[in-house]
Amino acid sequence: MILVDTHAHLGDPQFDADRDSVFERAAAAGVSRIVEIADHPDEWARAVAIARGRPSGVRCTLGLHPYYAGLYDDAFLPKLRLALDAAPEAVAIGEIGLDYAKAEVPHDVQRRAFAALAAAGRGWGVPLVIHCRDAYADLVPMLKDLFPEKPAAGRFWGVIHCFTGSPEDAEACSGMGFALGADGPVTYKKNDALREGFRRAGMGAAVLETDSPYLPPQSSRGKRNEPAAVLEIAAKLAEVYGAPLEEVARRTSANAAALYRWP
Ligand SMILES: [Zn+2]
Ligand SMILES: [Zn+2]
Image 1 (cartoon, rainbow, N blue to C red):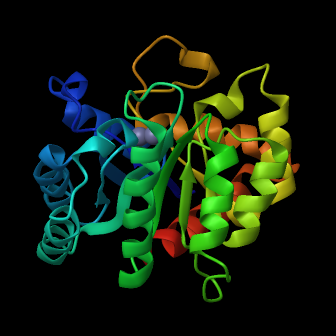
Image 2 (cartoon, helix red, strand yellow):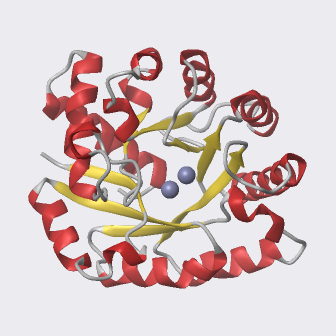
């Protein structure tokens, strides 16, 4: 069985003491691929180095999290383009997005940065890793504007990472050609509506992620999360879809390969 953690922050200092054993435990749990996510330009080089150090199993993304959307200016896209060109390991732009829960950046500033970055990704043919918290009412219409038609067959425009929207948001985003990232919260007892969203979007849109070191699944709440935990998320999705775990592993891994164009 092969599993993919499509979203982790293993460059986080919380992993400095035991990063190698984290990768080993992931491999032991069947997690053969991990995508390392960079949220701030100061993290880009570190993410590329992590991917370059494990070329068979790790890729990375380069992004500007909505927390830092205030940094966006006219020089940003050329800088991002150069960084992508210099790093074949970088398979997507992200995290980018909208965060109305925690980010201190004004919403209009977040929307401007997100729209510019999403349009650039689309123009360049690079998939997006989208972060959205308490902002689906703005995100969904923006995506409809930016991506009025479906991606090419078997492709995704990007992923709504750590999807936490309503069942209707799940249908809207997957219907436009976005994958939905399932992580720890899908295993939390109270989150029936979230599981309903994944059920409605279908297995064809689901990818697994941990967002390590954040968002541990039910069995390790309160602890540091790590990629090996995608197994618990896959097991929960198997319940959601009424499918064998092996099928969930196979389908979500195929979706991840299509999402990041990592065959
Ligand atoms: Zn995020
Ligand atoms: Zn993240």
